Length: 322
Image (cartoon, rainbow, N blue to C red; front, side, top):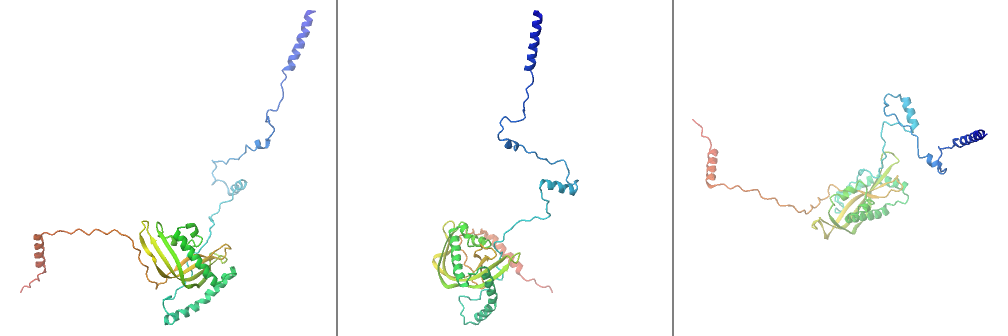
């Protein structure tokens, strides 16, 4: 009987152990924190890496075009396009020719009378150019522009004397900027505009198109007859040009340019016209090192007498034989 009880109890114990060791099912692939599931998925990107061993020359053009289309790559162009912006022209077109003796010759002289007639013939083109400017700028007036040009002229030269490069670019075009700044490095410039001997006036106007017909530039030449003072010092403080005491009368023909097609275009100094009959400029008073004199050769007395006798013998005429 005891054996039967033990047999029954052992059977129950085995059954209990079978229930305990049954495997527990769980989803281990999920993250323990269900938040930020979308962001965790974006951490890994599946990219189709290109085959580096593949020769592109052997691929047919249709398949190559298909691959480029899948990657979103545009086909290469046989030419290279680079954007560029033309803010100023490279020179003066149809430059104004100043009459000879302007500011000195009298109006009664024959040469001045001939030049006045020639200027009247060329004035029609200037009137057409001013009409073209007015089509872009309705408030443009030649007399008022002469006063504006004088202000631009004074401000440009004042900024040059101060050495303000950023402000100078507002009143000078890209073509005139290096010409203004030429030979001004390490120099001290004192410049003053004293007075106008004659009111500034517009003497020439032209318009032209660059690259396309819609891209129009205008150039106006203004005559300035004024009294100025100029003194230039080098880096050691020595005066090399001009004077701060003596004032001089200056006659200049300044070309102003504007990009008419650009709604934000402004009038700036573009160039200065120097006539052929203008007197030469004064050379700068530069300090130079005096060269050393060449060494003098000392001649001995006996040697000098021998040289004189040899010269006399060579200079004697040859006697003709009978």
